[in-house]
Image (cartoon, rainbow, N blue to C red; front, side):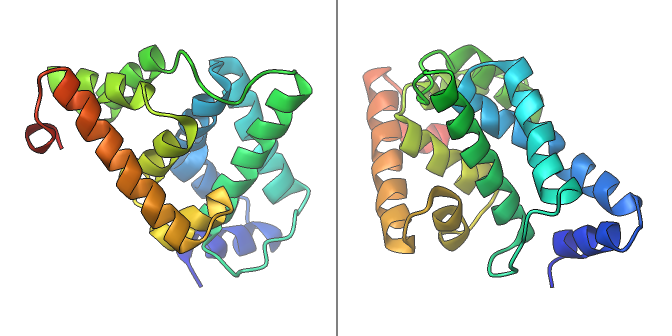
Length: 182
């Protein structure tokens, strides 16, 4: 049983600290992840709260066939897509670059390298950006990413390969080498 699921079970058993741990561990990460679909910080925060409401408070069923983190990100992605469809908006992020820069700078160091990487990520298509984010920022395995994105492990492997190749091409167009940045 993973540590996150233990927190979830503690909460279900009446220990409020379980939900506090999960919120501390995943609140900001979910906001950042959801923002990549909505391009709206307030909406991302609201959907993160809705995700926790559904998963924790309403007791939406976690079957235990994936890690709790994978399950949480899957629920968040589905909530973001549903909200964007409800609003009649495209789920792809056209203007993620500015937020991406702030996120990368906050997560790492305020450096030119971070800004370059954030701009490049903002130029990737949604699936490529999602795979890269989950792989490198959330350290998920291909299997976990597949569960979040509802793809097979092989499809995720192919997406990751194409996303890395697309990043390399973006860097080269900007006169940079992939190896010195990644």
